[in-house]
Length: 220
Image (spheres, rainbow, N blue to C red):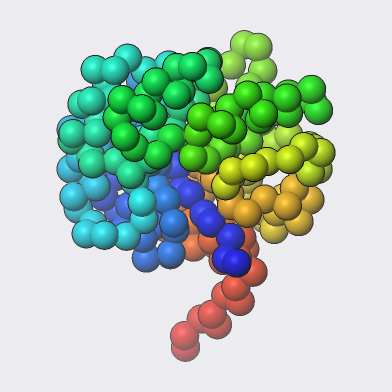
């Protein structure tokens, strides 16, 4: 089975086109104002409309109000809601029931004890995302370019489809998949040439490395 790849923090038509051309399965729009990759619902809608078809659109939210979810879903026609805050299992279940859209919950991992959250969230989500737990002083709940110990992911059953995130790059993603057993990966800063600015070559290299493709020889 091919490794699923999500390119998160897409904030321009060019970045969406690069992800689509490289074969990404998902792209993520960040609806969190503190992020350097943040977009508004209208911006996400315009970017999404610039490429017909292609990757499934994911909206990343941090403890969102229903009004924001409604606006983003209406403008960008999201395929998946990603919750990356302190949402409780009950809140996650309520969002999933109200909006009728598949939900992915991010779980921050630093130690084996953090894996206990998987059992609490698995019954109320369609997907999980295991990300590095941010440091206590972090402004962002994710996208901090920091990995966790990947082998920890093998220490607990994960009964839903899931993605691995946190500090992944074209250089280390194959090692991360091998160590964690992840069926999919999520990257943001690891495919940027500057903070919040995606790079076409890095996106291509990341997806190629994740799936073990041979990079084509340059044309002469």
